[in-house]
Image (cartoon, rainbow, N blue to C red):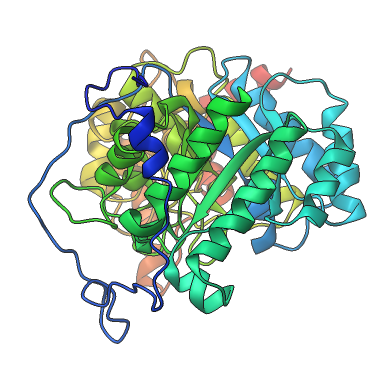
Length: 465
């Protein structure tokens, strides 16, 4: 009997072979009860739950140079190499950022890939992405990579409407390119596009079973990337297939015997759910989550890599020896070198993610920043708490701004009851009474503070010297 680690719901090799037969229907199964198109998609509950089963080893993969890049002006070779270096720096030998994938279609893509391969980094490992045809696969062989992603649309929306073929023809085409890869000793990572609208019994299960059969025959583990192409996956329990992420993962593991380490999730953010959906994949047996830096990707974007680093830390209780300050460095690189505008309220990387403007919050930060800060953002991300001053800041807000801006320790912190704070507040109030609508800028506030606190100006001069 074939075995799956940690799984008692086992199927025999004989069953596996029988389950490789596709239901070659004449008409596509479009799940119109779930996806009526003229209405918002439906979440159908069957109240059947599957168990949480977090793999012992979980990790992150990156698609910044593939799915991320196709949503931006094409990256320059130097930019790709710089970002690759930053990914390596962030991982810091931990193996948490396990792989990154590259296009191969242009001279620029191949030059960037070659320069990154010359680095010799173990992490992230370089992989590629191609369509399921032998012309594309020829590029993979020429570049000498060990693993490639291969696009394999698995829903009837794509098979019937995009490819204009039937399920059996799609099955045969996909299997042919996988056999080609295996014959050259290259690991195929099969991207099952649009899996959250796919017919599992009629296509996905037979197809994946065949892939696992080829794995056993070749001695090379075929990998499965489950692609939630339109972000339709649902993370909460008791939901009917094919939208249920817990059931997608459970089905691939129990009915197809895909080991956790060969399972990967690729999500999109169309329904604001890309992070919880990705986390759910980890929780229900998938080892690998595909991401892009800053969530840059098709339409509403991919799962942000930096978000899953923090999720990893919450689930595992640590981030090994990762260099998390690099997250801030990456954000600064995209803004300065690529003119990319990060929305200021974006968690972890936005300019205002740990900025407070409300007076009552500032008062709490003045007493102890832990009251209103998610964690020690200065220590972990090299992003100290910031208090912005506006008409609502009050005495506490101004005092908190001074303490954070001038990095005053507990002994030297300014108290909101200091009469000089009231003088500065009077100036701030006058600004807004005279029609100002913007926050007070750091430099103009610094001038006012030094005018009222000359010792801070002296301290600055001492530090500078």
